Structures are given as C-alpha cells and as structure tokens.
Image (cartoon, rainbow over all chains, first blue to last red):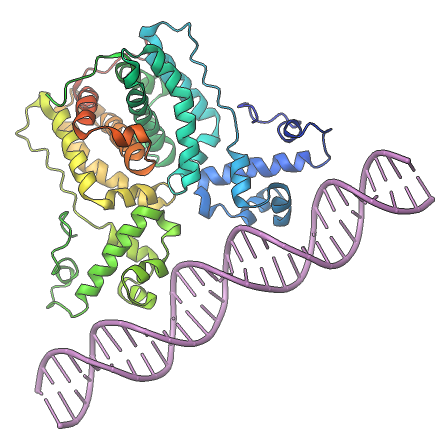
Length: 207
Length: 207
DNA sequence: AGCGTAGGCCAACAACTGTTGACAGTCCAG
DNA sequence: CTGGACTGTCAACAGTTGTTGGCCTACGCT
C-alpha cells in the first residue's frame, strides 16, 4: 500500500519487504506511474506491457522481472490507500456534502480510480477491487448515519451508483455537459441526493 | 435500425437495402445476436471475432464478409432504436418516476445497453454512441420540464449520471447490494432524485 | 437440366501480444 | 582487486488476433 499523494520517490516497494532501498526502486516507481497512466487511459487489454515500458523508457522484460506478469503489474498499480476519512465529527446532516466533496477531491487527484473503473468494467479482478474499496469506505459511514443498520448495504450501493455514475459520465465517457459542470455545482446537486440515500426513511415501493 | 424487441427473424438487413430477403439473412441475424452477447459480456477487445463466430456456428470469415470488419460488426450490433417515449402526457410531477421505470425496463430487456456501456468505457466510438443516445432521449424531456432551458444539458447530464451509475453498479460491476435491490425499490429511491435533477430550482453553489 | 451466383469453409497471412532466456555492464562487499 | 549479485538490453518464442483469398457446394432462375 502506498499513499494517495503521488509517490515521493522513496515510496512503495521498500516498505513491503523491509530491506534497504534498492538501486532499482526508481525504475520500479517509473514503471508503476506509466502503468497507472496507461491503465487509466486505455483499460486493461489495450494498455500493453510494451507501451507501458516504452513510456517508462525501459525494456518490456524489466516489467516482467519486477512485477511477474501483467496481472501483477495491474495489482501493484491499483494497490493504493484511498483513505476516505469522513470523520465521526461530521454532523449527520452534513454527511452528504462532505462525502461528495471528498469524493471529488480524491477522484480528481488520482488517476488510479479512473484506471480501476476502466478496468473493472471488463475485468473481474478490477470489479472486485472496486467493490472492495467502496464497501470499505462507504459501509462504516452508512452504518453510522442510516436509520436501520440492516439497510446499510443497500444505501451504500445507492450512494455508489450516484458517485460512480458521475465519475463515469464526467471522467470516463466525458459527456460534455458533465465535463463542463463546475465542481461546486456538482457538489450542490449531488450532496442532497447522497444525504437522502444515507439518512432518509426508506421510501415505499413506487407510490 | 432494428426494433428493441429481439428480432423477429425477418428483421434488420433487408430493410436497409430494399431488396428481397436473402437466404443469408438468418445467418446475419445469428451473427448479430452472438455479437451483442459477446460485446455485452466481454467488452470490445475481449469479444473476438473468432469467439463470436464460434457462438454463431459459422466461420470467422463470414463475419468479415457480412460486416466488413470488427468495427462494422460492432456498429451493426448497437444500431438499434431504443425509443424512449416518456410521452408528453406524463404530468410534470411524475416525470422522474416514469423515466426511471422506463429506463429499467429497457435496460433489463436489452443487452445492447450493457454492451454499449462496456465498450464505451474503452472505445471512443462506443462512448460517442452512448452519449448520442442519452442526449437524444433525455434532452427533449429536460427541455420540456426543466425551469430554464439553458440548464437542460446540465440537468440531462445529472440524470445520466444517476441512471448510468445504477446500470454500472447493478448490471456491469454487479455490486451484490445493487443486484439484490428490487426493481420497485430502485425506482422508489431514484425517482425523486431524477425528479429533482429535472425540475427543481438550481441549488446554490455548495452551501 | 444447366448454369450463374451467393453461401459457406479452409488455410494462411502479417501483426501484435505476453513472456522467456541468454548476454553484457555496473555496483558493492569481501 | 575480485567475485557475485543486481540492473538493464536484445532477440526470440509461442499463441492469438483481425483479415484475406481461393475453393467447393448448393440453391434458384431460365
């Protein structure tokens, strides 16, 4: 796991095994950065190891040596800690706004989420990872603020649908009106939705 | 353009050119059906012509002869008329519910939308087509019911984000809580959201 | 019946993919 | 200084992909 802030050179690998930093750690980081970019831009299949290696200005065989195979490279590329805080101190009636704003923050600072979304759509491992992230980040919040704990998973799913949908139309499909929307505008529109999904009473079936 | 209802044998091709039905029309339809299934299940790159041909129990070269190349096949596979009606007769305050229900209908009856979503995420042509569909289906409704016509594109984008997000989590990523939700429950939760995106006053920037 | 033509299959192609192994330079510990 | 481990390069592999052209068959019109 590495931090959200994009890599401070001596990151990542040396913490996994607790040995001293290796000479190749810089190369490793370069590969990972190139891989994230390619996966985010092209998805799993079209992000070829050769293209990633070319971006990183090294030989494709290095990628194999350091990450085993393509799946290993992808796993390493998305192995980051997203640390959604949404601390307990947020008043219940603001949880929607805080959550939406934080989500937009993370998404715009980090291309890993775009990569994950692009890959998850055609790759089962990516889909599971994405589900894991959202469950892990959303469930605690839902459990804390929603009226009936039993409904927490459903409410988390509803929030996910709205958040991922915005990410999809804005950052992946790039629908012009969604791209043109100002960050604050998005927050203003989505916050009440998320707030309702998390805290409102369960609506009757249709009406 | 063929109709939404899955093919009545004498469909499609013969209407494009107005000649008499050919002996090969059945094969053409079989190929198209197999292609839709594969594209929906695997996305563009992993849906190989060979696999599609195997599903249709014909030779890969036939696919090429009838559809030119893979892009042509994909274009033919997604060339359907989705005919979202949402007629003018719907009272303004019900437009959200009607729209959500209709959307779920179309989505569950038709694997083409799943194919389009899977492909659009990594393929520019697919993304454009999807955008075209949503603009064409959503803009008229937005123009009719939203307070300020100038905001119609933004509101349509917001609705798209919620609808596509639900489709993504439920039909593509298959988040278990999203899959388990009952159709009526989804409609009950999403309808007010869509209603608000379409008809409510523009909210202030954050608050 | 005979024949043109459309439907279908087979084999092959070039390009590209992930992946591997052998080889050369370079650093550091002894 | 010398050995061994590490970093990096090159060339090649086996498999798969989209795509092509030639060939045989069988229908349907005259």
